[in-house]
Amino acid sequence: MPTALKKQKPYILSISDTCMSRITKEYRLIRKTLASDDPTVNPYRGIIDLLNPIDETDLSKWEATIRGPEHTPYEHYQFRMLIDVPNSYPMAPPKIMFERDAILHCNVKSATGEVCLDILKLQDWTPVWDILHCVHAVWRLLREPVCESPLDVDMGNIIRCGDTRAYHGIVKYFLAERERNNQN
Amino acid sequence: MGDELHNRLLHQSNSTKDEILYKVIESLICSICHDYMFIPMMTPCGHNYCYGCLNTWFSSNTQKELACPQCRSDVTTIPALNTTLQQYLSFILDRLSSEEDDSFKRLLETKIKEENDYKLDKEKDTLFEGVFKNSALAVADDSDDGITRCSNCHWELDPDEVEDGNVCPHCNARIRNYAGGNDEFDEEEYSEGELNEIRESMRRRREERPASTDPFANGDDVSSEEDSSSGDEPMREHIPQGRWARSHNRSIAVDAVDDDEDEEEREEEEEEEMDSDMKDFIEDDEDEDEDGSRRELVLSALNNRQVIITDDEEEDAQEQAPAEEEDHDSDFYEHNDEGFVSGDSLDEGQKKAADMDSNSDSENRSISYPSSNEVDEQDDQDERDTEELDDPQPKRQKRFRVVLGDSDDE
Figure 1 (cartoon, each protein chain N blue to C red):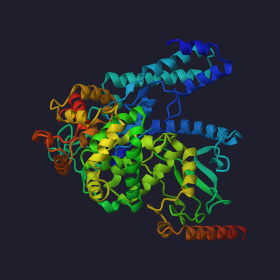
Figure 2 (cartoon, rainbow over the protein chains, first blue to last red):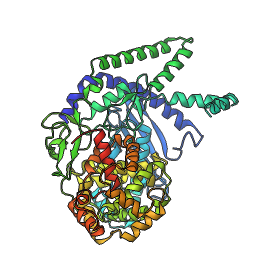
Figure 3 (cartoon, helix red, strand yellow):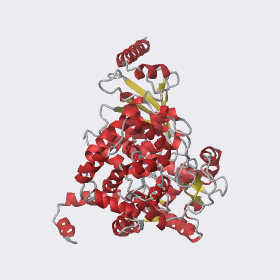
Figure 4 (cartoon, chains in turn red, yellow):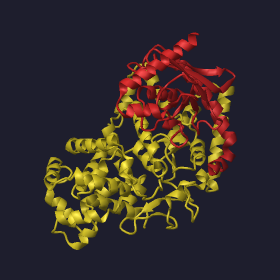
């Protein structure tokens, strides 16, 4: 890691320049895409309900709301994510977190909301990805949990045993509970 | 022929013309900064990025080998200026320059600045921070000692040391490809599901191979057929290959558990990202098997139980693919043609050389095979003379030799 930082130094200025201009462009495109009714332009209908900067003046903090995929225990629920765009973006990946205690999934640390997804790790990130596609990738993770590298080991083990019914049951219970707490 | 499209274009509606034009302009946008590429540089794998973006990308992640952001293949040779794209953009700017306003001026300023940056670096001979000058490939020659070495100074590349910064500890050259070395492979690192997947894909491939029409897959088909003549080899091909498998290789020395997940998730992403089906993808990328030797350990273990390709099968496969090889005999002569480069294989080798250029390092690593192969070979084909046994790999390997002869000498 130290090597990387050292090497990066001369570029910090240009990176944040690139970062700003790129993220502005992404924002424009995301707004256009998500506003469209044409499924070829906007394939994210029913997947990504919302994706925008929390504060229009600060494009480094974003929020997203995705809808639980069909035929999963997450169906009919919404999940809010917080996205942190680092200064070195797009050379480094954005940080995507779920809200705390808002989701139960074998690749999410429920207590912190941390997501375990390879493309969001520096090692496997490439600048070709953008925020929209990252959010979409997280949505796909809900549909296809990867039990081989669980952040939530207990949930991972349940899937590994092949007990999808138990997995679904627990998730459903958790989400129903979450809903009840929210109403109170 | 040459003006067919020109003529057609003239008779298109304006909306079609606009659509085409729009596409052309879109292809001038860099996928890193999402801006126009004033200095488009093309990687060996054919993807274009701004000079500045690519430069930043290469220096921003010294942890790993130089990889193309789009397809993740190793960038083993220095990207070249794509003058065609550059001229397109200049032409478009020229034509639109009459409507000069502030934002257009800024565009031109950026263009001039980027051109100057590039020119300066080129004059100083420091393109890409000299990363392609002071860099080397990790090469393992299994016919020698099988140890991964720096192609620059022949220093032994210890995976643990190289992992830390991906630099040769001796000559400080940056390693352009994966240098993970030949650490022991633990079969248990593959889950049962993955092993099944390997077996399954292997079976599928054997069935589908003769029907393949993918021009890019052809070369690999040949090699896989030939490989099947050595009992050990075929399995190697059927390990899931490509982007996710590569990253699997890359990090396997570090943390095998994580890797399993990487693969799975990558697979997901690929499903949406690429339309091409997995099979093509696998075949295309076979050459990227960077870690043959490690795999072979697992594979030979597997192989003993599961997947021995018999001679019968091999002949079947060859009969079904007459374009590749006339019959078993010609194949056999080819093997015995000790000039290494028979007329055929030379041609094919050169054809392949271009394709393989970007991967030549990985081929280097897969040139030679464990001695168990040689034993198998001996069983299969007693007629071969002993010299042949030192070179058990048929055409495929010869091709590599051709490539090698062209590029590096080891």
